[in-house]
Length: 118
Image 1 (cartoon, rainbow, N blue to C red):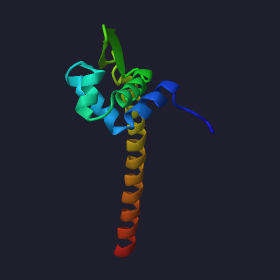
Image 2: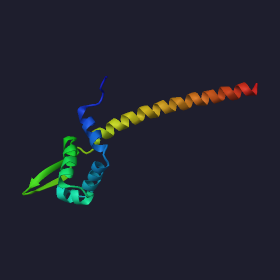
Image 3: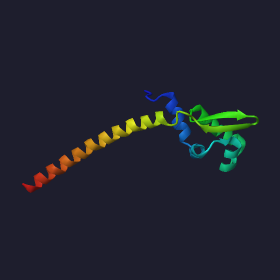
């Protein structure tokens, strides 16, 4: 099978496929937070939250920093730029295909109306 996407996009989209991880991104968009606070907010164990944060870190969407015994999470600097560019390129492809399909349908309707007018 041919693979077109980069490994980084694979990690990003895999990370974003989970509702909890998207919620973490939303929360960190409002303010940096400790893993403990995130775990409490999402009603999960500290171990469970650490696993979610690790997935987000591997994708580059979140960075953590340890201050004493507390690990603080914040959004990664790159954000979702790479992912947005990929989505936009593919959105344009879909749009072009749908525009071409609309044109074909219009031509078919025109031919049908021309044929029934004769």
